[in-house]
Image (cartoon, rainbow, N blue to C red; front, side, top):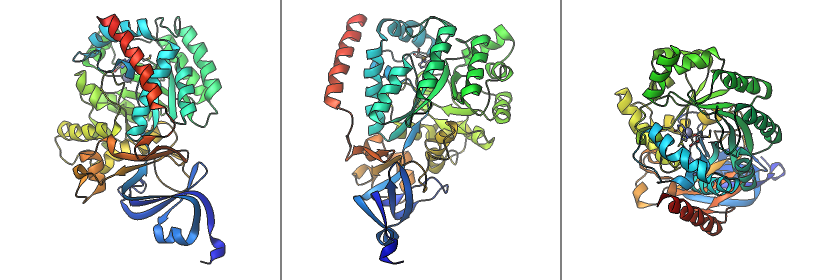
Length: 445
Ligand SMILES: CSC[C@H]1O[C@@H](n2cnc3c(O)ncnc32)[C@H](O)[C@@H]1O
Ligand SMILES: [Zn+2]
């Protein structure tokens, strides 16, 4: 190769270790990732990059693992303002006696703006570059994420009853249609449909949600089979399990993301298999609310795509997806009765390429290969608690916390540099968070 063939590009990231996710299980050493504009244009050994590229910026990461940004596939970002407000309760008591009354008192556009920013700050600091959200005032969450340059699937809420965002299903759906129309072509935002759960959305609006998804391509996300109570109550009242009801209504399809799925038998797994529906696993929320355990390895073995989410910070109580992976891997082994279940590499796939697949975006997200969008993170392994390094993938899942994330880029734009957020004014955000905490505390006293 001669000097004439040198290509100009924007950013070169020199990584000690690279976990590209594709090919599965690969761990490469001394690689360079080359970014031009919003995309990765090459992943190559550093000596080859020396010969082939000149970039305007080089980032040397000599003690770091570089990998695709994490995808947090389920949460309620603004609920971060309710973190630690109602602990040690089962789901329905938590919702009926604490969360829904608090939402009735406090939810407003400003609450959603400030709470979503707080969530984004935590997610960016801990390695998430794409998140999924289901909450009131989705247009505010979408705007805040767009302005910060973080990728997000934002689901508008759909329920049978009135809330601060709508008077009932008709209004949710008409506002939701407009919401999808506004955001469908955005570079960062993927508008989606969020029927809350089988026990809060009746057949008519559920079928409307499917029609809207078919018309627009928008994904559907729904809490499903979260607790034994949900399944027993539906079976007694309707004579069928929630998955069977949703299958009959046409909800179960590849464009639908089923969140939780802790109470599933072989009939549910075969409906997921046949329909191609996605599963979003939220192990820490499921443990904390004592909802149950999702048989992740069994689902994977059945060919079901399983991605991962934290759920909201009011039931987790953090948004650190690396911590979530550690829990997921540990719990999967006990549930399967097999220490080989959900290996470190499989866990990393759940938080990257499987999330991209659930979004229908695996052609451009979820792995570090040329042509994909430049959503990239780096984790600093130089701390004593991550030494020595035999297998970086092992450390990322079994020893790491999101706090070791040192750098991140979304669409080729730096979001975290040396552990600091580049685009969110944290000091100003903390003042607004303090103000909300004061108001929420006052109501509780
Ligand atoms: C329709 S907006 C979202 C709605 O869901 C509530 N919520 C938060 N976490 C959970 C969960 O684990 N299961 C069911 N519902 C949940 C949230 O408080 C909002 O009201
Ligand atoms: Zn949830």
